[in-house]
Image 1 (cartoon, rainbow, N blue to C red):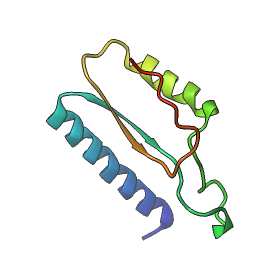
Image 2 (image 1 turned 135 degrees about the vertical axis):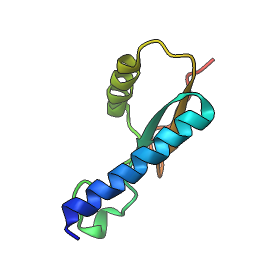
Image 3 (image 1 turned 180 degrees about the vertical axis):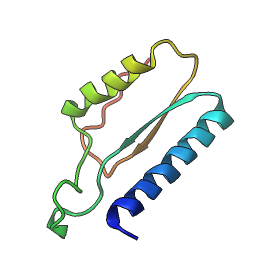
Length: 87
């Protein structure tokens, strides 16, 4: 199996899981995932943490969803700038 086909299969599996989660919870789901490979793994772009510059991407996704009744945020991160400004 080629690397591209494997990636496509993994993407489809992830999307299927997200769709199932949305149906079970009756909500829209946004997934925020940062890389967890160490910087010394010699794989560019596979290491990351939560940071302020990511907020625009989250905002854009929320804006794209429009008015919704329920939203679930799934986060996987190894840390970073984590501050809660909710109410």
